[in-house]
Amino acid sequence: MIDTAVPLRNVRPYRVLAPVRTAQSTTSTATQPDAIAHDLPSVGVVIATRDRPEAIARALQAVLAQDYAGELRVIVVYDGAPPDYLLSRALPRPVMVLSNWRAPGLAGTRNTGVLGLDTDLVAFCGDDDRWSPGKISAQVAALTARPEAEFVTCAVEVEQRGGVRPRLFGHATVGVDDLVRALAMIHSSTFLMRRDALLGGLGLVAEDAPGSVHEDWDLLLRAAKRSTVLHVDEPLVRVHPRRPQATAYDYALRISSLRWMMARHPEIRGCRPGAARAYGQLACWSAASGNRRDAWYFSRQALRNNWREPRAAIAIAATSGVVPVDRVLGALDRRAPHAPAWDNRRRSG
Image 1 (spheres, one colour):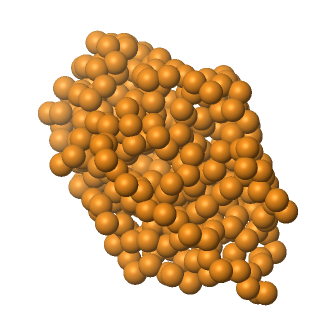
Image 2 (tube, helix red, strand yellow):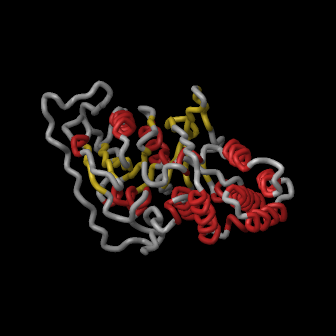
């Protein structure tokens, strides 16, 4: 398996060509500037999907509705499902449809899109998330003002129980300490990156993450270690959390992936609050999967780092039989910021 954190050499990108426009090549919400501003960086958008035609139609519509005055292209990459090439019909913005030719899963699907672009910047969008029209313009403005930066994110708004709740970060930058102390996870549908960094020192999305989980957090941490990660603290992306019933196999993947992250980024274990939260999550997942021994072990590790870590208490209560396991998972989900919005989309999208 290729270590995607290592810079790639001699990568030759595919050339994305704009489709031929016809008299019918308009949609009610897609926009195209009257004249492309060539002084602005070109932007390529990678939308990973599997088999969700209604979701991908909504996501694509929102991406095509961007008010960005520069060049904008879209690549829709299908993972494990027949691609819908009709999505590349003539539209105001160029759209290309590909099949994932790298490792199965979200990481490989996104890397397929990155390598299929030759734009200055690359953005990720989940197929069940929707961008506000000014997302790309606001983020490009932030990057333009800080030319040394390689990565910019933004805040989100989350649809929950029939309502929408904004999730603001509260800062204009995201640092390593933010990402390890509170396990802050900025949603991947907000990522906008310099493509030469992805093909260079930053590296592509890690395809060796167990179950293709936590690779977004890994990419963000790697970026924060290299240079300042900018953040536009406006809710420019609407995300749709989905919480399907998890199985023992799902818990095992989450445990393996979080341990992979802790081994890959020693800063997590070196930060006592962050280590306590991580061990608390491992304890809860171990309790949910019926592994009492590991649940006790990870609970002790959590308490050693922070005796007030609530996840450790939740796991101990479940392991002791004081509360049912399903309440453990409900409590853990309520304490997570918006991680379930992508934890349960690992296959792609």
